[in-house]
Image (tube, rainbow, N blue to C red; front, side, top):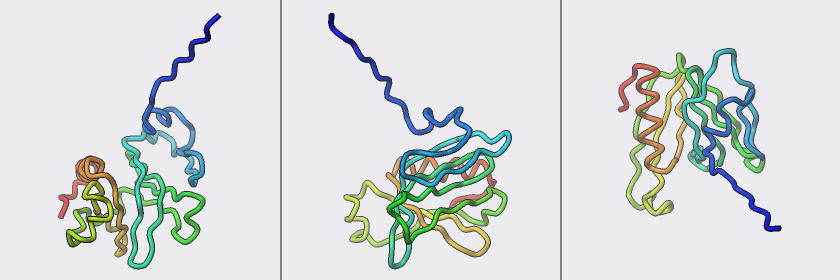
Length: 142
């Protein structure tokens, strides 16, 4: 008798829609706040001057969360309340820096309490995150 296994491909957002916490294997876990809804999620790189760290970026209706992978010991996770975000925008880098991602990776930033958090995502995710952050915070991307 043949055995048939059917798997439905789900996005990270779909998999975490009803979960009591935001967590994917080998990343930091965040508890869901009361009434908090997940809007978007994507794998990302949090970039700095001398170091990069990989992880998941979650956008909810209350927070922006960067959950670093457990192998990224030098780059801590970040939890930003949407009300604390001062600015969002495109991070302009020279074309030769973008070569490292074959032009598919696109940098952008979020500024909160005087500190800039730089993220590098696939270019469709960048546009999606900036648009949704603009709608949630009322800020215009710079």
